[in-house]
Structure formats: structure tokens, C-alpha cells
Length: 348
Image 1: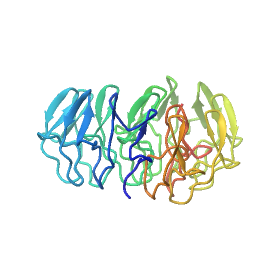
Image 2: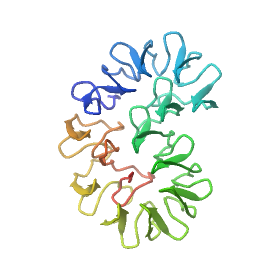
Image 3: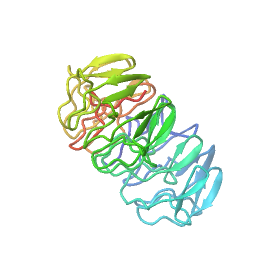
Image 4: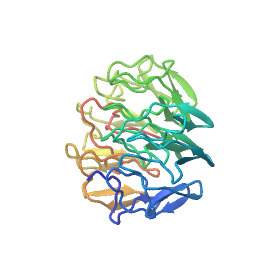
């Protein structure tokens, strides 16, 4: 209870192997103890082609090395020992991001998804991240999301919010889209009321409460085309004028999602890689369950124990994008946003 991403043989599946992936090397890992993160079988962690000896973190502590320092960009950075529940703090209370020290607020305790030093790896740089709260979905091993062959850092979403990045931007088509932090229930608003889509800025009016991705003229930009759409109703996302959605130059017929439901299509299926895949409706509160109790990892079905409530990072029916495949997301609770026509989110 409390462990996430475990497989049949007590390791994690990454890139067609049973083990934990760390920077171009496979690191075998034993089951993590309650509250501990990122430990390997021999108490070390892999960072930048080197083994950094680390002592096991105390309850709630992460990223401490044997000599009280942290590894950042090929350098050891002196750091004071982290207090209970704090992550990624250096000696001067800052975090390292893209060759600059960035002041950060200390994350609260009990949060998940940190790396050894409380940051994320993106484009050969360590990017600091806040810890996610418990029970949030769509996080990977280190609290980031995979987009277009890159690790995209994600900020701690607030309660019920998903997909926000640390600097309030979103990743779309190889570009970072600057966005204001959304208000309660709003998602995808940019700082200047625009979106970056396929190398173009799309003017948009601010969405209403619970609405996402509306443009100034009531259309959405998808794959170099303007798609006319009716303004979504409260809690609905991405519906077009005729009740369909645009996906890769094709219109996909859909039933309007029910309120609070996520990932359902008209015939109880989901869209993945140009194919409709029959799915069983997930049970209330469970995430990542599929009809035969398995998970999708790198083009293979992996038998898994049903996840307990509140666990994150499950794939194929319930969560994330893995290796060019759509992984179905579980139904979100009340007040979750970012639903598409079939209740999942489209990324490339």
C-alpha cells in the first residue's frame, strides 16, 4: 500500500526491460519502503553516467547524498540537509534550473515524484520541480510528463488540476507555450491570451469557468487547421459544433461526455493511434484498471495487480502516453478539467 508502478517482479518497466531507467542505464531496484523514493538495490542512484553513493533518506527526506551535497549538472553542489518533507533545497535555499539558481518555495511533506535532488531532467538540464500532492494523476517516475520524445516538467497541479508545468507553460508540438497560471477550474490560458500551436500563435479569448482552449472566434487550432467548435458547456472540453473532435485531419464522432466522466466514447471505447479500442469503464476511485487487469508498457501488455485507490502513474487504460501509444486515463473526480471528446487528452 502506498507504492506505485510496481510490476510482477518488483521492478519497473522502462523501454522493454524490467527495471528502473536512470540516464541511459538500467538500475535494478528493490521495492521502495513506505515514504522512500528513488532508492536502488544497493542504496545508490545513477546520475550522469556515474554512481553517486547516497545514504537512505529518512522518512519523507529525498536527495541527500553521503556527504550532504547534491549532484547538479556534472558538479557537486553543497547543500544543507533537507528538513522533514523538504526537497531539492541547496545551501542557499534555491534550486538549479537551466544554468541559473532559481529561488523556490519549499514543497510540503508527503508529496511524490521527486528525483534525487528534487528536480526533473529535461533537455540535458536538471529542472527543479515542486512535489505533486498525493492522488494526482499523469505523473511519471520523476513527476514529469513525456511529450514528443522529451521529458516535460510538470508543476504540482492544485487539487483537481492537471498538466500545469512549473513555470506555468504547456508543451505543444516541440514548443513551450507560455501561460498564466489558470484560475480555479480554468486551464490553458496564456499570459497574453494566446496559444502556441504548430509554430503559430492562436489568439483566444479567456475561457469561462471550466472551459479550456477556446479561441477568439470560437474555434480551435489543430494540426494546421482551424476547427469550428461550439463553446463547450460547463465541464466539457474540445467539443465541436457537430459533436465531434478533430484528430489528425479526421473528424471523430463522439457522444458528449457526462459530467465528471473522463475517457468515455459514444460506444464505450477510446481512441488510440487511429484505432478505436474497446475499454471497460473504470470503477469509481480506481485508476489504470483495464478489462483484463493488465497494463500497457512499451508495446506489450504486462499483467499487474489492480492498483489501489489514489495510486498514480498507471498506463494503458488509465493514464499516460508511453512510447507512441495513447494510454487511457481514468475518470477524474468532480472539478477535474482538460477533458477531450472522449475524456482523454490529445498529445501528438
